[in-house]
Length: 378
Image (cartoon, rainbow, N blue to C red; front, side):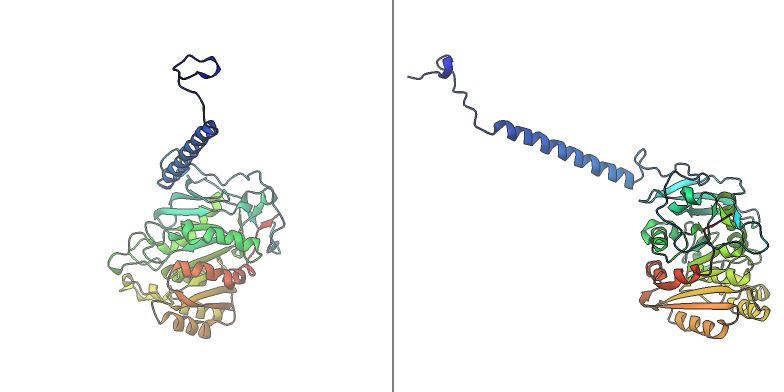
């Protein structure tokens, strides 16, 4: 005979509930909620990675015109460049017209790599230019300051992209870190295409105005600087303008500084060629000579200036075994008078950008920064 507990009808099942049943149910809900949240985060990350709107800000308009409401944490680490005697100001405010910049990527510190397609009025060439400004550029303390510009040139095809724009190589974050460590100026970066087309069948343009070809020398030394002056607060003297590049980009930057020392003061040339060697020079020997860094350095020495600062970086495992001997020969022959040189031999370094960016922090960026101005203010 059975008895129902607590007055329950006979035959009703006992309703004894084991302790802990409700907490286990609560835990299941917590686990389910956490799993759902995790899936949501993963989905967001996947859609952001593949740039699926609205999970990415790629393509959004970017303006570098107005300072953001940020607070600077200290004074400029490498000092200002001061004012040149006889000049009212070294600061050149943006001249306009404003370019149509679109966001290419957003860095963890909130800064943007932006891109525009720029119609070069002086060269007649139309191509992409990626730009980046360090966070200091948007801080109130520097709202009226001009910043130095570094034109970063790639090796390889140099078209239709410029590999320095990608965050995988760490150029932008490295400049920010080096500035915080007192090693570097807070450079604005201009990252244009180097060539007007892919280097199919070994064709490239040496960053030069080769007769009958797109004027890539004028593009790099006239149009790209014009774009930066139109859209950024820059420095109205050569003390605020430099190049950096690797391989053919290193050659183009080296040649640009030696050819236009009135406009540019310094370069970091990594694994560079020393002489022009594009097959497109055939039949144009005079013009080729006018773009030869060896002859340009010789002429600069004979003119006794102005002073230029050439920082070379070469790995011991470069794909071309002649690169290091050629650079050393150039330094030994032309590194005198107004041609100042610095060499960083990268032990175990190879002919690639991943070798060259960390090496810049070993001395090259600090060496050229000592000879450049910025940020400067009225």
